[in-house]
Length: 153
Ligand SMILES: [Zn+2]
Image (cartoon, helix red, strand yellow):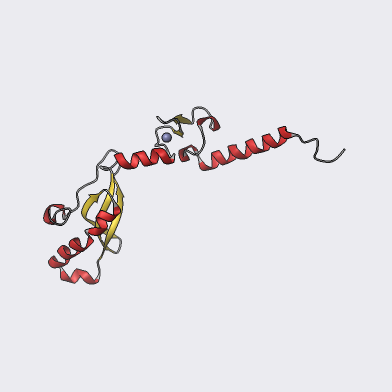
């Protein structure tokens, strides 16, 4: 008898199945990469689009993540910031896109440095993506009312 030939498709199938279950566990139900049948009942629920997702957690499937990105404008956005080492000041925002925030960095810098020209040597201006705490909404930037969110406002 040749070695190995008696190991039929059943064994290979089992091996594949175990590997997949391990991988499904490894990436976790929150990844949205595996269907609900790969996970122990009671450890997950099914999102409105039929993906496995953690109990009370957001669905991690790329489709649902994309959907969430369009509806979470009040809790997720981009700000123009000023940094002083570990401290970050939120100057303008929130903006829906990184590009919008980036386009306003110059105006925010001009405004801040017109008030305190000495800050120029130790402050850095840039942008940051912010997510509101659960149940909260993003707060307006400190300069929103002073110079407006966009030029020409
Ligand atoms: Zn989903």
